[in-house]
Image 1: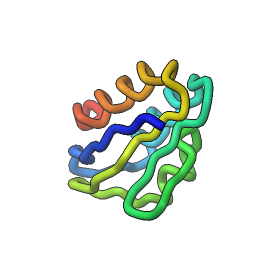
Image 2: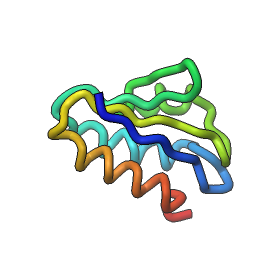
Image 3: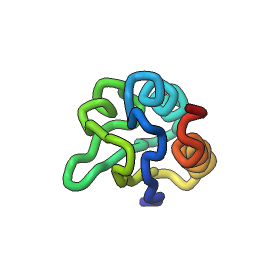
Image 4: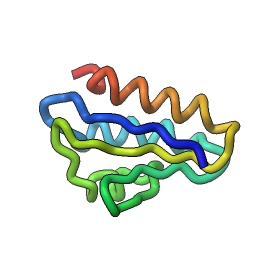
Length: 87
């Protein structure tokens, strides 16, 4: 499994618009793509699942990819998070 640890940077945290952006990108993965915060791990292609993590600014999350072919997708989502979702 491949992982990237990230910090939520935008002031409003991981709300509906950023969750939708992550889910849209994750839906193109060939295998499972997951998001976790502490002990909770959710499907990164589901907006509702992502919102259940309740990530505020400063929250630490981990992206997980099962297939190495999905690493560009992992990098794309990481770039989005690191840029504060453009907010």
